[in-house]
Amino acid sequence: MELKKVALNNVHEALGAKMVPFAGYNMPVRYSSDLEEHHTVRKAVGIFDVSHMGEFMVTGPGALDLIQRVTTNDASKLTPGKIQYSCFPNQDGGIVDDLLVYCLAEEEYMLVVNASNIEKDWNWINQFNTGNVKLENISDAMSLFAVQGPKTAEALQSLTPVDLPNMVYYTFDKGTFAGVPNVIISATGYTGSGGFEIYVPNENAKEVFEKIMQAGEPYGIKPIGLGARDTLRLEMGFCLYGNDITDSTSPLEAGLGWITKFSKDFTNADNLKAQKEQGVSRKLIGFEMMEQGIPRSHYEIVNAEGATIGEVTSGTMSPSLGKGVGLGYLQTEFTAPGTDIFIKVRNKQLKAQVVKLPFYKPTV
Image (cartoon, rainbow, N blue to C red; front, side, top):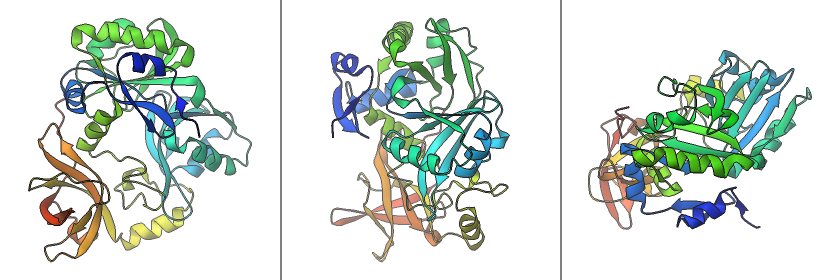
């Protein structure tokens, strides 16, 4: 199957990006080095092209009812300008995908889903659309830039009348940006260093990208690839679909009880409620390496006696902390912060410790 290309594919190649297949797209993984790009976002400002993400419009009578049916969080709490993190539960106790729900207006919502799941999610929602709610998949028409870092508001303010410094986390505004009207500017960053997401039609993408780069130049802006995106989100303990949450992990096991609201009915709610009452047998936790070593996805986690007690789902050498960190599922009795565990790296058992998330404590 041929790889899809984002609207700025040629721009990234011209900037010297190393392009790799990711979620069915040809995507920039890095421009310089993962380490340099990671620190650029932590200290200044960087721009990610995440146009591979999917966007669905859900509008008209019954829009809210449909969203309530297919997601775990309570979307009735949303008002225009607010955003909610949520997930689609499946019938088997797992997760179809995690997503963002934007309330654009009464009876008008935008769902932002993971690139690898666009078709799966689209089919999933449609099977529950018995009320003929208007659904539109605008993924191929939209570009999305995540501009992240402590200097982002200052760097971008000249491009828009929207008051960027005072925008609250998980809210958005619609306004002119870089000369383009009706741009959605949101604050839902995946890095822990502040910043904004800019949704623009593909035909305006190149012009907007160039204006962001120009405005950000005095602040040290650089294009950032997927490699640094992964280390930045992992330092915050944010889940990545396909690694930390999957079709076979429940939201309660994944620590997403806070977005699982039993005050309404949704897909598989009864089974998840029973799981909450009985307690889960495993939980997603964060851990730091106490010995030299880099934990990787699927590495075994064992106890002091060498018995398997879990598995690593994401791991890396944290550029900000200078030590190995990871996420993984553990049998519940081993999940208290401070518990010593061991990661099997090749033939060695390297000591690690369960810690409270996030690993990186942001200063913004």
